[in-house]
Image (cartoon, rainbow over all chains, first blue to last red; front, side, top):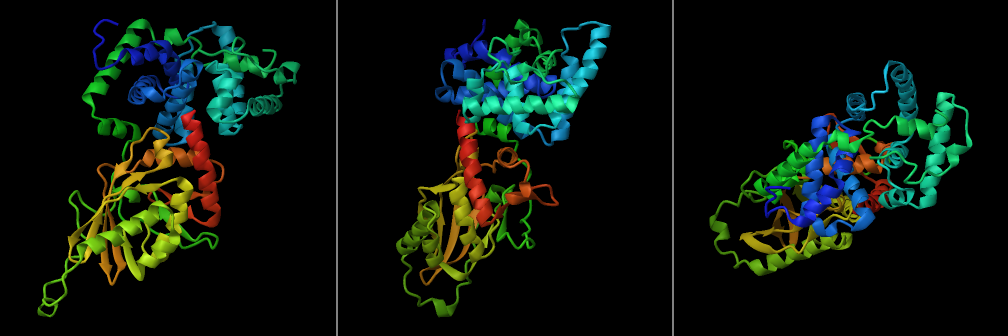
Length: 187
Length: 277
């Protein structure tokens, strides 16, 4: 980037270029647009300070998500506010614009889905978000959460079954099929 | 949608990360981050993360709940109570009186040694030595919310459980019967999130070889309130009453009990590993 100064070293810039969008998307899925940028900036400030602690390779992104999660947790004063902001961000950043009819269907589906998800333990919600929205592999999530891969599989399977029951959706075989990175949504 | 997983993916509120942060905004955010990194001191950066709360007054004590031995006010007490920006002594120095003019010379080195022993006992969670060095009617002030000797003794296993350290204290005589110790204060749950240690000053009044009063001075900058809140939310969101409770002033108070010690120990470890990984 033109004008990149000496103070922000090339290591950080490389980290930033590689992951800033995913970190920003992570934040945007959990808070408002402006705050998402601010938190993203804070995350890389922390990374800048602790550049030697940032793990290399595939683990850098989960590490950054962990920092972002912590920064957001510091900022979120209540789960209700958090929920409102997520809903707001969700509406604002609906870039897919699928058109009136699908949008209506999706909205109800989305509402039901979010309501079902809200009944899950917070940790399970976060695991689902990390896998399905952030695109982390289950191994990465397991590392991030400091649990085994099998535990992540079990939690996801259990969460989907519970959500399906809540929503009245027929159970399918896919509910217990592990989702790989390629299958995951993510950024 | 054929299944919940697909519905989840379709419900992604930010399906396109690149569209949410176009190139120009990506560059602008980098410049902003760069500016913040150069404009802000490390201390300011810490504050930006921790969002220090205004100081509060002395904490109340939990007197209910037979299961709980005591209540530790954590939210603000650790660093924000009591002392102003300028160090104070535990008690006003005694007025010079004729009867004291013949007092033996004070061995400030011996007082400092007592102070350093006490601080080392805190840092090694040595309850017996703290018990030995504190007078039974010792009066702690602003000591993490402890106001009696028994409170202080109950605090030590909590410090152990949460990995709180008062590291490498140096003590120096500040008055004929007082010493000031300057430990480096480390909280594992805050350090896990990148928070730096805090410098504090503990003033001790010593009589007959025992500490009769102690007061913990405000460190260089504030308590990591928000980090603590983040920690306890992460640690025990479903059963906060077992580890902490929210007082009427909205601040979280850690509970000191055998159960909370083990819970704090467990969750501190998990939190540490979670953030580190």
